[in-house]
Length: 174
Image (cartoon, rainbow, N blue to C red):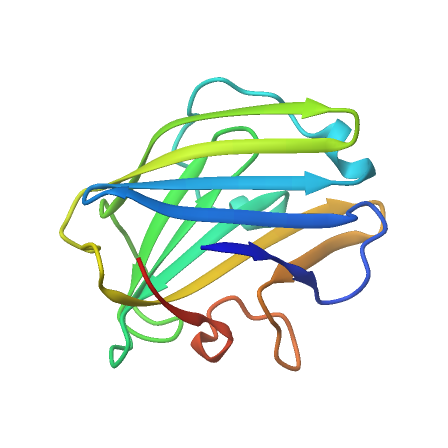
């Protein structure tokens, strides 16, 4: 799945923000981000995963939400440009959040050339959460910090930024 994210409000530091999500095997997802604009040069360069940390959405953060059609349960996976990451599971909209082992960061690296930042990560699917040729609800989002504050990017937005709103997700077969 390739997608370009749109900001909720204009963000002068980002000209484009693109994601590529690919199921590379029954147990692995490739998660790639490309950010173009002045913000790119200020993002850290990494070659290894960081630590599991909560609250990553308070700064630069790339996010993946995965659910199944007909189910209110979903997973939230966060990755910061520092390589720090986290995974949560919810029973329903913003309810009963628990840390999850279902999606784990295996490796990641980043690079920057001029004003284009690229981050590549591989996610291990610990459980049988995703099987090939299965339909999913997917939300791909990002939080970007600039001088103006936090900017929210998603596939699409409702009346306010809300990455947990499954009405803003797309259904795809991985």
